[in-house]
Length: 116
Image (cartoon, rainbow, N blue to C red):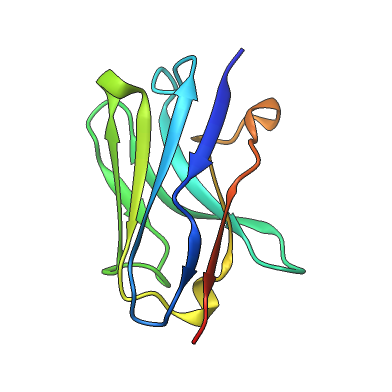
């Protein structure tokens, strides 16, 4: 059984930065990949960024490319998402999970609000 705990969210002004962390109790780095997802109010949960667990290749959706950076520390069983140049449309609850996501692994997420 894997438990994922996201942290690091908060309220930030447009143009600001946040660094999200996802600590895994039980490893998710044995899967094909790990990823960050987000769900804005009234919308479905979507992939934001992913990292392959074999070679570290990354992928970003177009809306965050050049602004967000996904990374991992396998020794600490932790996944990170550095978010820079934040925009109001980045407001959402952010989650980590395996890629593809495994339903029982969804955690509480961490709220990111970008507003002036």
